[in-house]
Image (cartoon, rainbow over all chains, first blue to last red; front, side):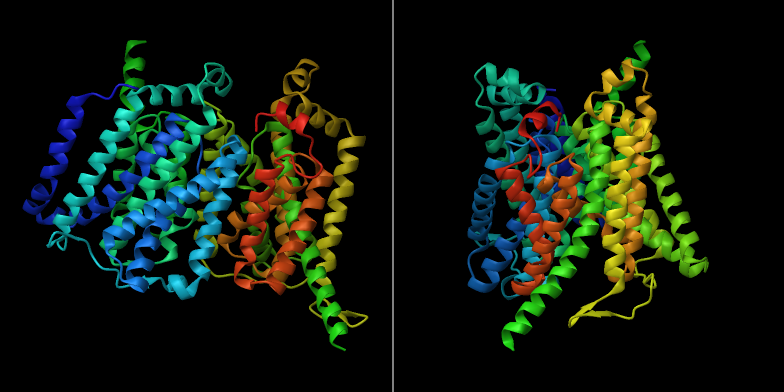
Length: 317
Length: 300
């Protein structure tokens, strides 16, 4: 789980790079390119969450709050203050880091159920703020007219351009996180997950590591939120509610939270499910999500990423 | 005159707060029953309340059965759902880590909520108040009679549970499981059955909360999550696992929410309970009546 091989990374990168071209050749799949933009944004969220939940073993049921903080920083600062979008993105990441530090420091002293409920409550409170501070956030109607992104005169105005922008950020985040996991920090996180007492006895500063990972996950989520806001040019509180926090949990559970690859697979699958495939289910959507989550939790605790290993073990037996 | 109006308003908020608090207390008691026996925090607890309300609407209003029969039938239906929850979602989890169990209850709550939406749609439903909507006027204070029903049922539940846990063999067996599951098994208590019973009783209490709440605040499929987290806030505030604590926590939370919405900003009504929850978790996770020493033995 700690080793992340180079081969699959290169194959994955080439696949992602060629995907828009492939979709462009297949009219029936053309609309999958924007879906993959959302998938990339979700990947940013799940990479951080996988590090927090899968590697460090700390549950967060309010991660949509940081996603929202990024998006609203971008929205509010561009619309009310006319700031440069990149500056807003930075401000959003900084705000998320500060909030994560303020909430994470006391919250991460809690374990299991208590941490779950603290993060859940935090997520709902932030969402209520988005809804109630109408003067700044536009309330339930949200903010319209958030500008797009451009760099040195090059505007990311076409979906394909934005696709490459998002996936470049995902690639950077993935490589950084993969390196982190394979470093002593990663091993320390695994030790905390296995036994906090033992990790502490070995001299690992448990509290500091947990908070750092929480802040890191929050910053990635805020970046994802900014990317979302500048892509959609419109945000409203519904995108960042409790249900989305739970959707994130579904993503990393389905993919397998003990693996970065699992986090990516889960994010892509749920993005495609929620925007495309689940339309056929209509009203059944919530039930389907619940069933998927329950079945994976009961029968495939390692998620899809753990499936090959599970099958191999079955065959060998 | 003005001070009279103010104190009058104060009393009015207090009555509302007590009523809402009684509902939170019932949810908190439900949390505690399951938590004590299994150390599982059942995040689907709020769905029991929602189901209680909607099933009651179906049996009492749509089918037209009389109040008492509908009440009993609703409690029975929701109890069965609670038992099924344990059988189908909690017990099958193969690697029962705290995280896996939390996720399993979240999944179950989504299935229940989604199922309720498929059956009843997204509209809120009303239920006739048990003894009519004619308000009672006591010394200038306007009371809905349903408020008294809610508080009355909390009192009945509290007395019944106290008798059950202290006077019956079954209740004592459940307390034994709560203290130490392995030791309970050694003296011949069927722990699995006790867990099943805990889910059943907890669901039944949730159903009562839903049935009594619906005539006051209507009910729709989406209410479960918020009720669950506020009930949890009440349980934590009072001290997780303590029944007097659940009642105390529920009442305090209801009052805070009622006064907060009345005197501060009403838009943040739902936030007050959550802020209290965060503060308690950060400052004194063992709650008012909980003991730190006991809390350490638990797995959280």
